[in-house]
Image 1: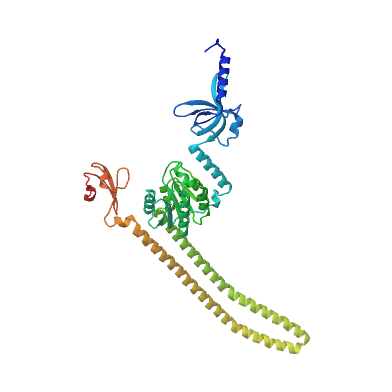
Image 2 (image 1 turned 45 degrees about the vertical axis):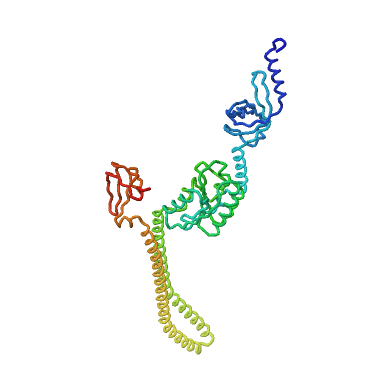
Length: 449
């Protein structure tokens, strides 16, 4: 280099001028080591890196305030800006004038904006969502029929409660064309009037689940007349469809379990309803009996009161007429009183007889109604008890079968899952036993596969 030596400040000034000649650049990379906004200045400092290199970046406070999102480590961004040298330290930095999220980060920003929009409209309010019945007799499963999710859900529903009727409705669960097919499948499922709709799919990347972040799909779920239970992806995955659904479960299996209580729970509910029905019938019979007794007590009293008022009125009239014509009116009224007394004496037994007959008819009708109600309830409970007995594992055990469990308590379905010397337990129709495996023999069918 020609010329004499220069000062450090001069050298950095030359570098600063050279960098200024580079002009504005657009750079894509991953945020690393993010620090900011600084408590005093409000500026942000971090490294932008790719697989081959890294550079220092500064985002001034005014620029950061306009971003509309927070920068975080691992976020993929595209920045516009230019290089500069800070003369005091000699450090070169890229001064970002514009920052945009790219890749998955951009998708997450778009989904977050849609979630805020729908939440502001009240579509995620729990009070606006349909309630899922405690026990669903009919369930529609909306998913892809080509994957294993369908089999997992059907198997779970069958294991939990075989009384549940299942309807499968096929749709695409991934790709740009998936949201319209999911919407059509939901409407088809709604038309069959199930108790609940299961909207499920297996796990995948964030991009794979984007079909369930569609605004049109979200509005369709909110407009359905049937509650929707979602089981999309795995535990950390949350989509817009999850947020607007009546119930969100972490996996398809969990979604199936939530709408099909186990048989033991159903039996308990039936017994509780039976007790409540019996108590209600008892209360009604007691109330009817008290009402009949009240009528029996009030009827003679009411008749006697009417007779007394009539006698008092006749006596008052007789007093007035006596004052006008004592010689004639007194005799005339006396005869009227005699005839009235005779009629009253005749009417009282007949009135009492009619009241007794009425009480008898009311008692008979109350007894017949109570007996019919009890018979209907008993018939219904007998039918339910027969269904439960047919499905009970105890019925199978009574025919000589046993339930075998391994050391971990798992039910043994295949001999190949055991090994010689392993401890096992067996539950019989009456009692249980502990044993040790001495040999394992697979079936001939399994052996040939």
